[in-house]
Length: 367
Ligand code: UD1
Ligand code: UDP
Image 1 (spheres, rainbow, N blue to C red):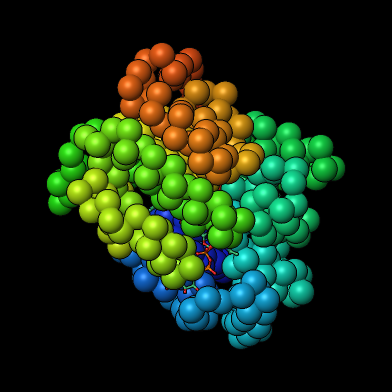
Image 2 (cartoon, rainbow, N blue to C red):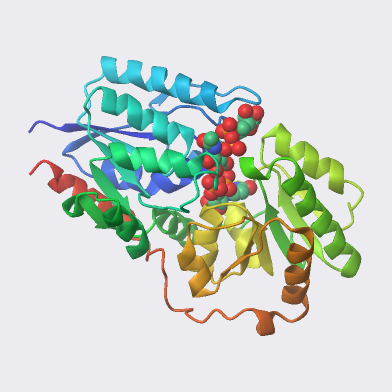
């Protein structure tokens, strides 16, 4: 049998976590030759995430440099993936989500007329600058894609509204839920020693650099002043632009804040489970929190994941200091009054079977 050559391309931490279940599921099939290509847009953070799933990339383009620009990432990925594709015949390329790796890798494949499968297709905020540059990255990737793995009904509908071929759109659930369940199933004890009440905080988005990040830190300060018993766990993103502002602004609150390096996925899942609630601008964390029934205050002006908000786990608070402070304090003081996780049993992002579904769809792609 002529095996099909498929390369899964990733570059950053969330792509590594969310593509891992797909890579593992595809590797179980003997009709495929599966390669993992990391662009190395993130170095340590991608390697850390892959390690939890025991995946070692077959190719690493190692493009990362400090304070890299969008032009730099896009052009290096385009050239590096292009060269790989020129030297290695591929039948299908899989990309994930909305990073610059995602878009540039899809473009390199398009230039060689190699079909692209887009995992986590169809997310839309309908504002080209929010999140920046991810909204345009995912729109352009979907313009290129031949197969759309939409995580939810709403994302499939977005693709239909844009005129994408209905026969190529598949609702699969989000593979992050598969990743989350894989880690929970392992039942490995975390080495973290955490104290209640605990707020888990992450922030990294480009559109939050500067003022928004300062507002977030000011809100943390207000919360600590109002509730001196509160603990924060802040795993810092490796980006110096982000970590410098956060550490500088909050360094005097050592009694209340634990700063860490990016946590491995096992520890991070433990922290999400343990904390009272999460404050975050992350995309993936909104989906994980939904599966864990954990409230997450979303520090963005809008979310392309309305499912988490209608389920009740996601609360949009933006980056306004007072709003973050007020809602966080309400949640600490009287959680039952504020949180109405009305649809606890509804799991909008799927049940952990997404990777298996994607594998089945890919098997039929050439039939
Ligand atoms: C990128 C993605 C964003 C995704 C995020 C996940 C783009 C444009 N942005 O944003 O969509 O949500 O990853 O975290 O694709 N760094 C390290 N080591 C690492 C990782 C990053 O030192 O392992 C530092 C480097 O200095 C790098 C900087 O972080 O230049 C920024 O990385 P970059 O990928 O450009 O942007 P992110 O904000 O991480
Ligand atoms: N995560 C992690 N360790 C951390 C922080 C986050 O493993 O210290 C995981 C988190 O569970 C989620 C993903 O990283 O699966 C989110 O990554 P990030 O916030 O960097 O990107 P986004 O989701 O915003 O694209």
